[in-house]
Image (cartoon, rainbow, N blue to C red):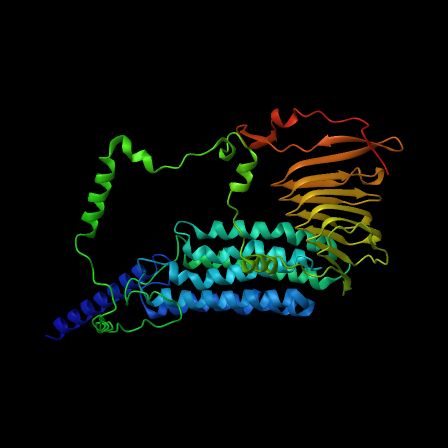
Length: 480
């Protein structure tokens, strides 16, 4: 009897071990963030390690730099905290049929971060802001159903274009920016490892528990009874003065119409004869006098003038940034007292000319039309964005000229700037003027149409023949 009891106990123990093993294997099939509280805790603990490590370092280095970089970092931290709340919800709830409202808080954070960069295009830390703005869509990996890890890597690669600029500008002068780049890029590197460990094939939702609510933060509201319909209005009150509805009035009108038609040729007896001096085809002057004119309401005109209210022009030095804004028909703008660390931000200037003397860090021209820009030396980049009909002349040297979303841009190079890089995107009517002799220029158009082919191992892109049809001009531009 004792042997039988021992055998039964051993069998029960083996069955319990098998049950635990099967539950663990089913719960860890796609990381350990599904089926159960323990898996959710492990997933959140791994994400907390990410927040306490690279994210904390990134916040500290951003605080050391300060200014717009610190504010931008706080926005990134809030976005990551929102994503943690989303992961916590996914660990304890089943996936809903519609994710749009759940993803909206994270989407709003992404737009806020990117808009902050757009509002601070004149900042001396523009490359820092761009690195974050170009890579922050990586937070959208929770909506990628197949392999979110490579998606995060693509966003990280987009950031490196701008972080390389930061390293180029500060590698030898300020170690804080180098540490900032390292800490920020490590966030997305660790995020890839986190996804590979816990969400390899997509966000892992719980297999048990309730269906996730429609909103991430607001609790679902209890359904309320519909409001009762409003009471009917009072019946209409008729007075003796009110006209009574006339029955058969439509029939009487039809009878009168047919009676007039039945008159035959006599119907024209009531028409008035028009003399020759009253006919418009014989007197053209009557056409103009007879045309009715529509008078515009004074209220509409005043509202349009208020909508087109102009802002006052501005030319001032704000910290290390020269702001040149809202100038119209001004051709004598000059910036003379410049320093190497200063930047110039030109915004919404039309039909104007700006001259910059000395050596500065960078120049940005944004949302301008028919602007002439003449400068001597730039150690960073000259960037033209969202503009039309821009003429740019280099008197000294510049390493890079960037033209984005611009229609019409003439670039006059000097002999010292012939080696500069000209980068263009989404732009048209671009011409580069290369000096020949002492006072002549030769025009070279920048191709706008390209052809891309697969050569068996990589994509090869080159200008099409249509883009080469316009031949370069020769000695048709002279220096003033």
